Image 1 (cartoon, rainbow, N blue to C red):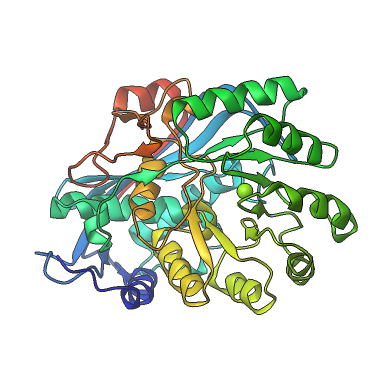
Image 2: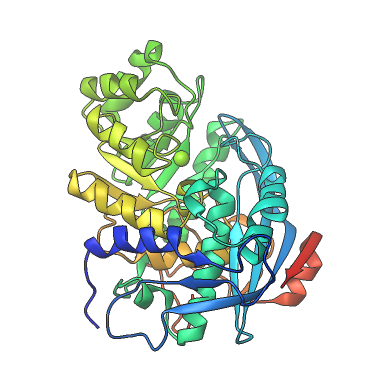
Length: 410
Ligand SMILES: [Mg+2]
């Protein structure tokens, strides 16, 4: 099957945004809401699905060990799983997976749960046309869109990557390592993950934990593909720290400044040889345009959750590559449902650095999909064949970790 190339994604985004149609508000319900999809030519028998019910499951799965970044510490994954059933009885799963607190963004599991329960799902089922571009919560939007794509893929008995026109390939994986109290603990973790095969190491930095840990890792691993992520913890007053980090042959420095400090990031980039990578700054096509105009990053971390779904992620990939920026697929991290969907995205040849998506066991004591995501000794993740993502959801585990549930039907 021939992919239709980049042009297809803007079209895809437009269709997914605009073609949710259902019974008009205030009129008797006559038909189930219909969602139309646009996909590569020649693989479809049908172009749409109808929706009969949506279940929301809020789950908490413990981390293997707490994860500390410049904004705080998390010890469990708090995620919302979306179970969407079509008129044909086919189930698609999505996941909305913001970080808890305001650890990473203003969207949290609580706000996302409320948006899904009180706004998006009722609108999808009964209020008629739903324009996802008008939904403010990108994480909620990404979860719904993921469930729609998964239901559609299962309806077509087709892999998600095929629906998106992406040729299957093993996905190179890198590990993200948090902040520790001591350099010894950090070196121990780097050792562990390098031995597990990860193709590059990213460490989280913050003021007081930056040049010293990078220097220590470089002393132990002179050739290791290495990068840092500040999660917006610095300002331009810290230029000297970045000039020092610039000496360590890093692959990139991720989000050194505040998400909104785009002009300042352009100024910082002008002082550095190491490419800057935008993460928190790059949450939409609009902000991507600002990054390009300000030369504020040479690399973009595209996260399906942060940007609001697979369609927006593909459109941003298209725009970033057109501006000669390099891209890779990041993670919140998510549980297996959203991670598996992001892995299908990450197979796109437009992504040129290892993904942050890692083995389920790197983060979680358990996962809700089967099989778990695993990494090969050579650092690649192979996505299993089969319809949808190739993984299946274990309902018993969803129940085991569930802390709240809601269901909606026509
Ligand atoms: Mg980041």
